[in-house]
Length: 275
Image 1: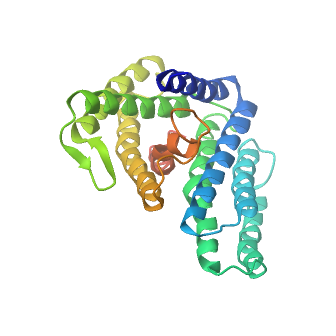
Image 2: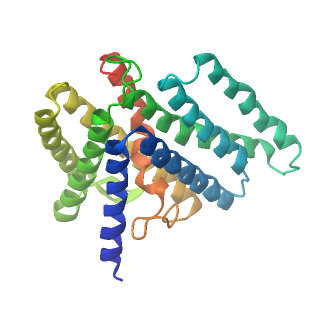
Image 3: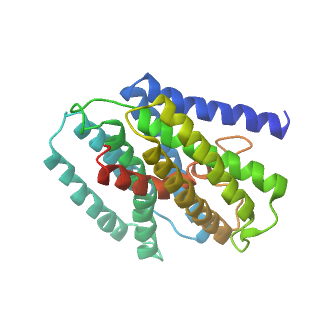
């Protein structure tokens, strides 16, 4: 099977799984995005071994997944907010468990374990507060905003790729990502603006100005997210975070722009009282 065909099939299945999980309902959303969280954290921790750092795989992923499931249950009204305080002693276990591991670089291990939670689990946790829109009907599930956010992210990636391949000459950040160009960056913004306008025609509850802002935030911060992950991989001398998506790399590679942009987009939505 050619690399192009592999990329096409895996990319299509990836997009279909995201869209399908959001449209079908809250249980599929929980399962798919919980799986994405686990796979992303696993790839992150696994890569850190190349830097001779040994994070606590199990406890880190357990805390990250518990945080995601806990905020999901809180969002649908199944648990009270006070139960979320249970993550404080759970996080303290990272320090305690390290005492018994007898590793040469204990605080590096602790730091990377927490970094996996902060970098991956917390941004994905914000998705719970986006799909369960407390500003309308309490505990109601609404996928439109999150689905549109992903569509805008994909539009930016597509525009950046097409413009970068066709007319890209001026390097954006050659030290970290030699292939990225300023032409691709602005091409991504153009595509994002067009798709934001198209989305505003379908989802009338939010006007074009807000869709445009969400798209631009996702596009600009997403580029930094891509560069940050590239910086991490380059420091370890690896090309891809994993092989879960043939032709595309790992799950971490596909969500690098999301991890940095999702918290900023959520903050914007909250400030504008859209969620």
